[in-house]
Image (cartoon, rainbow, N blue to C red; front, side, top):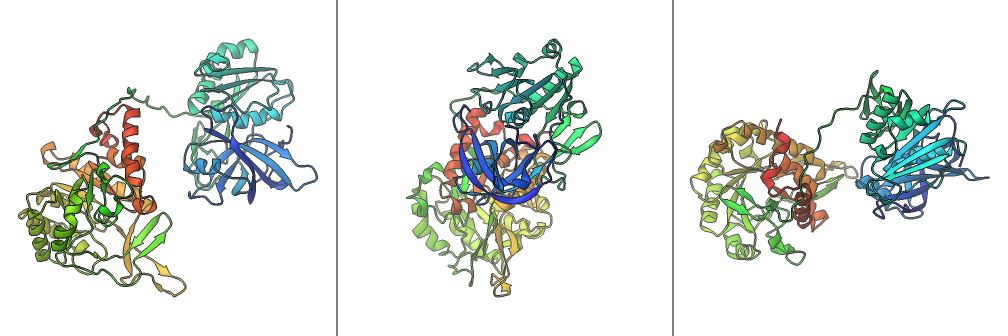
Length: 591
């Protein structure tokens, strides 16, 4: 296998076909690593150590993923070459690459970065690889003369990627002792070994703790080392500056100045040791919103789950913490005219306009069915004037709803809605009036359009709110380019979905941060809303300090999203040793 270039090849962009994508033999557990073989043009042959930015043509992710080259094979009398990658199925982007079928198309940019420097003639070479980091160093090894190097490979369990190794000495270590030496790479390769074997250079790639270790023993043994690093990156071309690596010469770009660096120049950041927790069996997912006790923190967001019974045939609704009803007004409403929904990248725009049967009809026809679902019932109350809000509140107070969510943030109505939530004065006024009517837990739903959402939140708290939910939809505009006119009759429409999550999380963070500055007795809980689609999204909001979360747009994409979030939260808590939500609620706010 000597088909690697001896010099670096400039990057080109092309679309390649999948020749094969199969689980890598020997990787444990089976299917954790995949071998992806692509047919590429001959003008993109990498040097050993270079990488490509890969993205499936049918991908659901925005960015390509950097993947090191494992092996290259030039096809005789052809304009193509076969390039092989070993891919760890870890995140969404890499899982997509691992799920490709023969003939699927992959966009690739590369080869990118620098390559391993060639050893001096007669050098005594040591090569070390850990986990999927075996790929680039195994590729480098295959470009050297057979028997001209020693190779140390380290895995958690099993072994893979060694079929092209023609080492003078091959040493294998596994954390679980399933193969070779029992232990990490430190069980076989030490500073003393470097001295005894008289290695003159070490090449390594693997997890950061391993590279930090290699750097340390090479420093002790006074041996030159070259380390291949990885970093999150957007471009692979040295433009985005997102893949900074700290060195003694200042920040360097992993994608352009690396990924291979002289070991003595790298400054590894000091990392806090993670707190050890013992996995637990039974966890408590319950959450309290004022006097309202929820069995878990997952609530169906208003306007995205109807009145709950619509999804009764899909999954057990009683598994949810609660349901916030469709937005309710005192009078029945037909909603807005024209287009009502519009899909966007990673989001959904809507202009429904509070279509609902009216509060009296809700109480008579829908509430009994909601109560029978076995979860907390939260009535989302809206209106066009203070009087209409108050009239609706009086009816709901006498009904069997468990809590009232005061919606002063709807972006899709001409009167009322978000207008009440834009300023401290109006938000405080309407909250105080509703508080004087209802004894049930009162949640105030805030708008992200407010100039100072923290001030509005504190004003609502002072006016008697038991909790805050934030945030309602952001506002956006869409234009139909064929008609040359706005998509929605009201021009602006609500925008939600995964695209808004970082902004919504920021608002939750800021309101919780403000609450934490108050005496504990004066704080009220925050319910996080905005782009939550997975259990890990929910964990982010809870770690930012949210007491509970509401899930909206995600249900349209995956009707089981909330069920999966509840299950994922429970699994996460068991794995991390958290017995209750308070064990990690607000942990990210602690300084």
